[in-house]
Amino acid sequence: MNRTRLAALAALALVAGPAPAQQNYVSGNPYLVVESGQRFNRLQDAIFAIGDGKGTIRIDPGHWDDCGVQIAGDVTYEAAVPGKTIFSGPRNCEGKAALVLRGRAAKVTGFIFTDERSGEGNQAGIRLEKGNLAVSQVWFKDSDEGILAANDPNGHITVEQSTFTRLGRCGGYAACAHSIYVNFYASVTVRHCRFEAGRGGHYLKSRAARIEASDNSFDDSQGTATNYMIDLPAGAKGRVSGNWFVQGAHKENGTAMIAVAAEEHHNSSAGLVIEGNVARLAPGASGTVWVADWSGEQLALGANELASGIAKYQRR
Image 1 (spheres, rainbow, N blue to C red):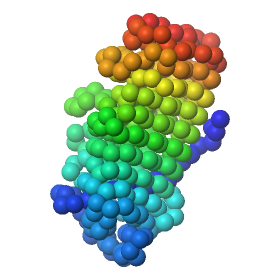
Image 2 (image 1 turned 90 degrees about the vertical axis):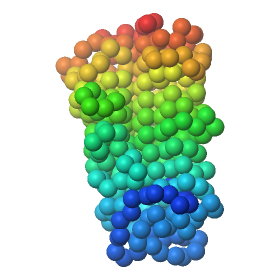
Image 3 (image 1 turned 120 degrees about the vertical axis):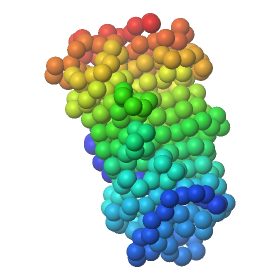
Image 4 (image 1 turned 135 degrees about the vertical axis):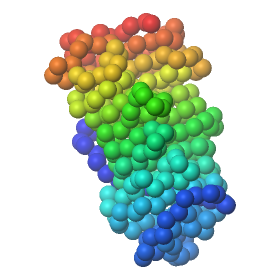
């Protein structure tokens, strides 16, 4: 299992037609549409140039106060130098995110998204509203949420080799925010990622029908007011395996590390595999339950390495 801290990088997948995006002029034309060789000083103009087609926007190193909305097409957003292209708030599109995606597909690689915050409490680096999304080598930090996805029962999401740091919030003026929050998608896959130092909510919350969470680290030792490590509130099939979990001492809800069907039974959870994981308690952390299950179905709970003080399973 790769437990190395993966701190950096992400890409921007967008496409557009006439969308009301909040745009900012950036000097130096940092946005290159690779296929045509055209350069633009606004991300939205580069997205418009691809339209309903397929293309790649390569973005120069720098700290860009800009955003874009993709409403069509298949767009790859890539950093020219991974880890050196930074998008930060408070500027965002449609009051939602640096990247608002509702085209056919998007791929985002090599970026840093930071300081994405709003008065509503749910501003994200990436807001996905429709279509497939692939994210790799991206660092989401110090924001309300990293990735927030709406409903697309035919859509698939993959997040790999990315880091989620000091994200989330809960309580008060708005609904909870999470490091990754996926609503009703066909599937979500999260591999070789690091989640750390959450500031509220859950680290990975998904209502997708199928989940694969493998070879990730969930380090809550510096978390504050956090809840579950993995929350599958509508149930899910799939696999949670090869992950490393550390439960912190400063939880809002520390009663479980993984929760299945805590809100509704929209998806079947029969046969959900949870095996080959390692779970520990940080100094000062209270005892907890490894898997709390509201589904009433038979999970495939295999061998996991649990520290003393972590109960294996509880039906709720």
